[in-house]
Image 1: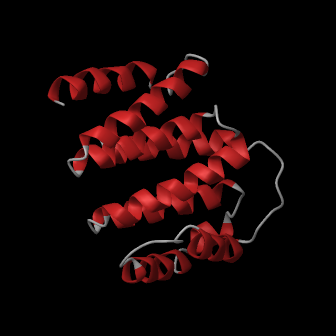
Image 2 (image 1 turned 45 degrees about the horizontal axis):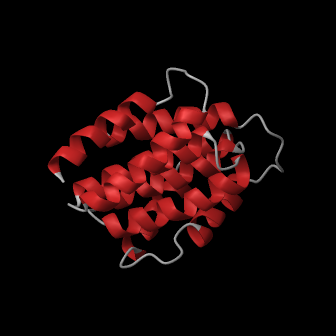
Image 3 (image 1 turned 135 degrees about the vertical axis):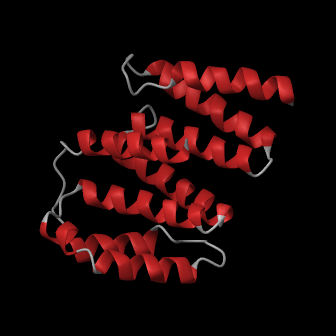
Length: 168
């Protein structure tokens, strides 16, 4: 489920890249992600180092560098932390992406709603149902303000809220 949501979020990010931003090279983007989106992580150095090495070896990504690549790199790094079981680091990176999404796209954006949605699932996975509910409520509130579409998870968010509130 987490992988599917990350794929949807990635697809949305590619759609959102239509805004004009200064072009960064792939190496600049990788450095930016490594420096700015690993802020405050705990015990994540080994995962970050492996991620950077794998990303540097990806010559195809280098060749097709574009503005959406930075967002893809951030989400890839979160996936690496989740696969390593470092949920605290993943949550901190989502916090950083939330700041980024709000600054880049505004508080009522698809990316912001999806970050809340994903954060809620990490809280739920780690047994913190109270924070999962809070995040999913934020996600539902943002989704509600967005146009209906195949990537609007308002109904899903409400279903999770109903299910979790019964359990809580």
